[in-house]
Amino acid sequence: MPKVVAGNWKMHYGPAETANYFARFRPDANPESVSLIFFVAGLSLHAAKTSARVPVELGVQSIHWEPSGALTGETSAEMAAEAGASFALVGHSERRHVFGETDAEVGRKVAAAVRAGLVPVVCVGELLEERRAGRLAEVLRRQVSAFLPSLQGGGRFMVAYEPVWAIGTGETATPQDASDAHGIVREALGELGRAPILYGGSVKSGNATALMSAPDVDGVLVGGASLDPEVFTKIAMAGDSAGGSTGGGSAG
Ligand code: PEP
Image: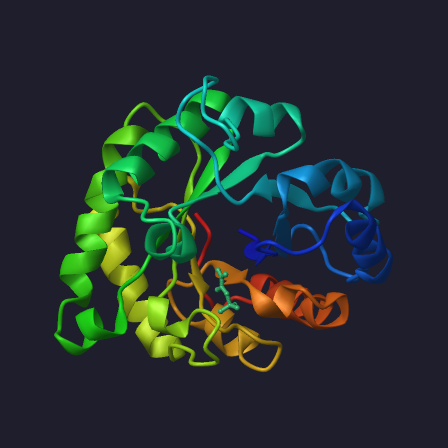
């Protein structure tokens, strides 16, 4: 299966900057080896769709669980799908820790994504103090069990393991840390444990190959380093090599 290389642009790049970006993003990658996903601002979906020069899939960074309503400023899963998204990030650590999103809300958002035909990419990950206290497995199991019931009716999904201490900090989990955490997530997913699990947290062009070649790592979710089209091209090509090789985990 192809490795997944996903970029989370966060609150960057409106339509014009999106078009400029894709004029410079031209990896010579084999879609059978690497699958490229961009989580862009909802307002830039159309620009991304019309300006990408290589096959990419698009997603939004957050959705509300209601299909419509008096919820000023929110975007429903149905609206995102209609505007060109195929994927939705759910439970990103900035949503959990800056905007106070709860495990229960993450579960409702996963259900909404499935209802609208979007593929949820559900983020899980521990705080530094939780890791230091030896609570990694407990935290990951709790986060997974909160959204698992939303997937029982079927539907494609992915999980992104993103240790909070590694997001935007320059600190990266080692490939072994990532493999270990992915093993815990896979076990917690039970019969759905063959879903792709991505690693996220300060992925750069220099560490992407090692991370994507680690057992049980099916791809990467990249924040800061996805904002530079030349750097992200290198990460896409690292996915292309890792996906084409026989050494890494499989995105089953
Ligand atoms: C992210 O935003 O999901 C992320 C992993 O960010 P960064 O790569 O900048 O750590």
